[in-house]
Amino acid sequence: MKSACVVDASVIIRLGGERVFHVIPQLFSCAMVPQEAFDEIINDQELKKQIETYRQTAKAKIVGRIMLDQFQRASYDSVISSMRPYLSSEQSEYSNIGETSSVAMAIALSVPIVLMDDSEAEGVIEQIPGIRNGINIFRSIAAIRAAKALGIISRKTERALEKRWASQGDSPTQSEDGKLLVEALKKAGAT
Image (tube, rainbow, N blue to C red; front, side):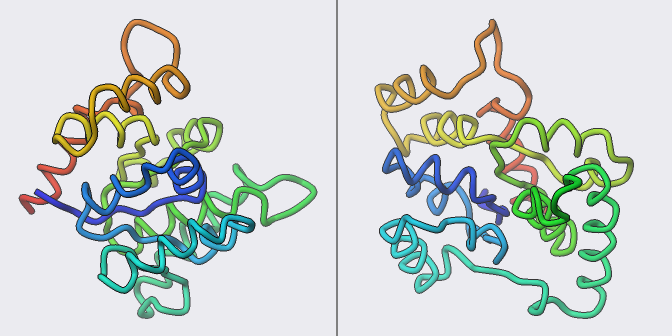
C-alpha cells in the first residue's frame, strides 16, 4: 500500500515541532524532500538529524534538480516556469520556492502525493491548468488522520493535533481528509 511522497518544509517543521514526523516514513515508502524545502529548515538541527537518520534507511531522500535526468529536468523546469508568475512575489522570484519546488519535483518524478501546509499556495496551484491534475496535495492534518486510521498514532494524539490544525467546520477540506489520503496511498501502491 505504500507510495512515495514529496514533502514541503511546512509539513516537516509542523510535524517535527510536535514530535510526530515519524508518521511520514511509516505512511510512505520514501519521503522525498526537495533541496529547496530542506534548506528552509534552518534552525532545527534535531529535525535535520532525524531526517538524516531516515535518509540512511532510505525512508527519506533529499532531491535536487541536478539529480534529475534530462527529461525529468525539463518537466521540473516547465512546472517551475508555469508556477513562478502565480507564486513568486514582486520582491523575490524565490518566494514560495519550497512549495514550487515540491510540486515541480512531484510532477518530474511522477510522485502522486505532495504534503504541504500552505493553503494560499495550494489554492493557487489548484487554478493552474495541467499542474493540479498530476498530483494530490494533502496537509499535515491529513497525514495525522491517515496515521490514526492505520494505527500508527493514538486517537488522543490525533485529537490534540486536530484542535490546533484542522479547519473549523463540519467536514475536513479535501487536503485535510485522512481518508482521502489513505485512498490515494492505496491507489498509488496498486500501480
